[in-house]
Length: 108
Image (cartoon, rainbow, N blue to C red; front, side, top):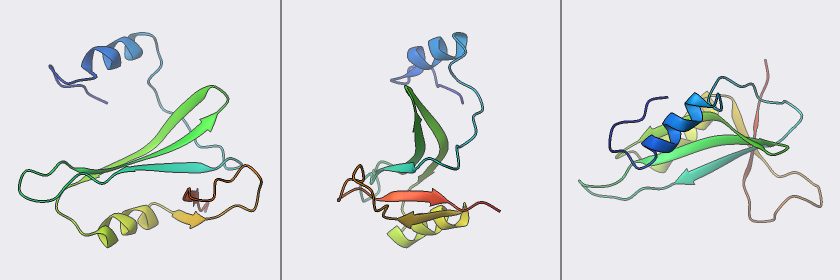
């Protein structure tokens, strides 16, 4: 991960790296993944469409995967998720929010 000089989070990322809070982590196959999506915008000056695939383990929020693209249709982004082994599912559990899309990574 690299922060560009002058970037909004550059100073915070530099501090996190110094404190050892940035590194490689593995997903826990027993816990849900969450995909957070910023749809960006449209047109020549649009922001990028981004996806952060995360997993919450105790007080940690693990960023497991990241995607960024500009100028693509929605199906292109969904295909990226599928190509990485992520599948949409709705858990039947009391903690599952009814309007939240949950993703699970297929193993193997």
